[in-house]
Image (cartoon, rainbow, N blue to C red; front, side, top):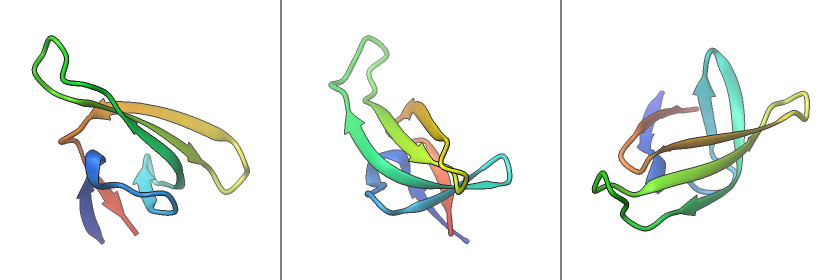
Length: 65
């Protein structure tokens, strides 16, 4: 299992969250905010077709498969 930061994810990457594999559909980076970090809005899809949206700091680590 390899790791990637939220800002380095790309469409089609598969990430693990809560023991479930999610496929990245799209990613948007925000400008640097009050806390001094960028935020990433990541749209993902489960294998069942359910869409999940995650918002994480740009330097948040994800486990990729």
